[in-house]
Amino acid sequence: MSLRKKQAVPKNPLVRTYAIFALALSYWRDARAIARAKRRLPEIEAKAKEARIYELGGERFRREALRLGGLIIKVGQFLSARTDVLPLEFTRQLASLQDQVPAASYSEVQQLLESVYQKPVSEVFRDFGQEPVAAASLGQVHHALLRDEGQDVAVKVRRPGIKELASIDLRALALVMAALKRWTRAGRRLDTVRIFREFRDMVNRELDYVQERQNLEAFAENFKDNPAVKIPQVYPAYSSKSVLVMEYVSGYKLTDHEALVKAGLDPKALAHTLVNTFLQQIVVDGVVQIDPHPGNFFAGYDGKLIFLDFGMIGHIPPEHLAYAAQLVEGVLSQDASRVVDAIDGLGFLAPHAQKQLLQRAMTVLLNRSAGTPLSPGPQLTRVVSDFQDFLYEEPLLFPAQYMFLGRAIGMLFGLISALDPDLDWLQVLRQEALPLINARRQAAGPSWLGSIRRAVTDMFGAEAATLVDTIGRRVWDTVLMAGRLPGSVDRIVATAAAGELVTRPELTQMMRRVDRIGDLIESLVFLLAFFGVAASGFLFMNYHWIVLRDGAWAFSILFLLWFVRLKRRANRRLRQRHIMSEQFDDPF
Image 1 (tube, rainbow, N blue to C red):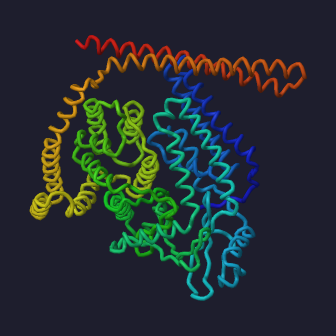
Image 2: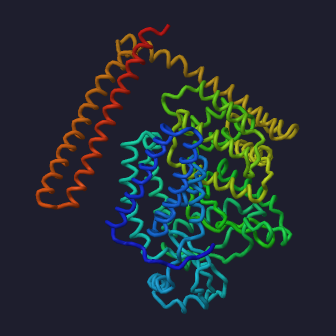
Image 3: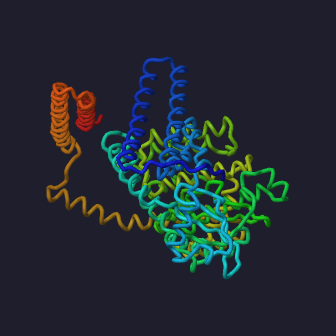
């Protein structure tokens, strides 16, 4: 990872908060410009203008992230990997953030180390490299030699002052995400407040190197029997909340194809190891490294895959592991019904989603993506575009805990495609995922199903066992559902007998009145704000306070625009309620 010379980072809370808000507001202007282009320009010209706006937006974010430092770099790195939901023109501009993070000075690092160890650095380390070997947004790594053990170690140091900057940035981001959820449809659909909370918790965990040490030890335990994986040894006696000391390991970058081949290593074998290790994390362990960018891995001189960073770790709840396995199986078998059931179990379906319509859309998506290689090209571009359309158009929710897992999978696909551009990922998943899933299920479910599964695996292989498992579980689920059915019928009958069964048309009429009252109150607030701020502008003009006058009038215009927007939204909502009411009044 290349290192840039450290520049002065603004630390004033007001300056940083203003910069973050200004950056967020610039993308609202971009969205309006794209909407205007689509309305006024021919399709080809509109698409070209849209691509240019996205490109300039990505460049703007990268420039501001490097100027501000702190968590904004981390946000940019997160966005750069979301090629599944963000335009490539935008994410391409952010990709270089992984390599352009400026390093903290050695004097700052030395001061931090001596405050942790309560002694000079020279009494802890026989040798300590003053130039970091890697620098990230929250920390950096130095090569050192322990004085007592004489062991080569990597010393990961939390970036001095980063906790204070993180606190400022988190407060600003909280306001931005709350505004997105309050004022935009995309913000409500994505639940940006929950995403922010997950991001905040993840950052706090990543800033705590005791937590990272525990993550490293958990990974070492999970992969202790895998001869293709290397997890560095940790030195707890030298580690703390702000310093992590572990075994120094070296090797080849996974993206340096020429060096790998020259050393006699097989890039395709490394790609398969990556797939296998992450499948184990997702469908077996439930503990996932969610920052798999190339700088966090090495290929060892002996061909082993070396994990280097354990700060960003996601956890899949135990009750969701079965759904994650079902999702993989559904994709492998091209079973749209099974995929939709799995994403429903994982919490991705909106309450109003119609599963039958969603299954049709999923069937089309699975058919189009079958056999698509991961190498860049028209096929992959088309599949990514189809997937983006699916995410935008279908009634899906995005649980915060899985937004970061989705980012990790996107990054992983990019890394794997560099190692093996022609990889048939469906075939690899069949070979690698099914044995892991079946092994995990050996002790789960009814005993008779486990016995049948083991026998079929021995005779016909993992794919046949998965088919048997699918059929058996559906039969078992049907039996359980049949057992619950009488109770459900009794509850419905009892509710109707008590006169408490409410029909949807009655609910619709009530919601129309509630919507009307809420919209009137909301509109009144913004109208009063408009008149109040506009009047302030005239008052400032009398005192020749030009800046305050212009600011007040600018805000008054914003309030007026929001008032008009609210009125339009209220009218649209009333029309939708009216249509819904008519449909229920005359269903035929």
